[in-house]
Length: 333
Ligand code: CP
Image (cartoon, rainbow, N blue to C red; front, side):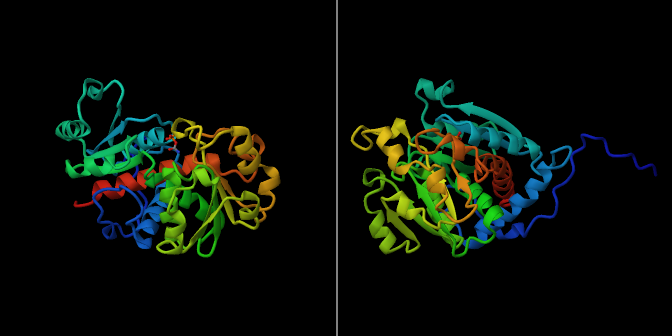
């Protein structure tokens, strides 16, 4: 028998994965119901995916025959590009649809769109939508797997998972680490999902922002159901000794003048800049989910400085989304 040498572009199987059998979720709608073991399984699977991404030919046949549809009703750069790349690296067939330009413009409902996409063969639907709860509605009307790629103010699970992945790479275990999240907490699906992901992994969170941008009732939740979450309106106090800092985007499109009368005043009190970052623990990683408003919630020097993890977050997003696609698409096999 003659064994032919491998062609340079031949897809190579995945490295050994952690115990996939322990993943039984049909959808990934948020992280609030995921156990610590499930989160760790996803993050460990992402480690294997990162190994694939570092190969000379980043391609594996793991999801050959699977169709992934990225259905985005809201703008996105990072999430959409990384889901597309993640699907392609896993050899899935990937279709990208924006709400604008689809039959949604002609009045088709989300449910009808989801059913239509299932009928054309979608196995996984990655859905971004401006309405909180839209992925939950979709999940009730399809047998395809739904991944929430950000719904309104509610949740952004793959962002929180890639943030946890990035923090664990820098800090090791998150057990006992104190992480400051500063900004527009009220409108932030990233903060909400991180609240679950990071505390489940053992971190304590300090959520910081002006009172108008802190959700009503959060303090009661912090006293009761979420004991590892503290609320602060003074960043200078909160950042002292923090193990990591995450700045959030000021979401001008979701803010009224009553919530934030002046960006200049906001920046003077809540911008993460070099002076403030120097008060966190030495070398504390700085995260931002993007897109950044440099000069508002983050200064340009720290956004691109040595403590910034912003580009690595984006890179890790591909591996984490590969892990999510892989685990979900194989559920029920
Ligand atoms: N972090 C995030 O969701 O970015 P995009 O809106 O660019 O996807």
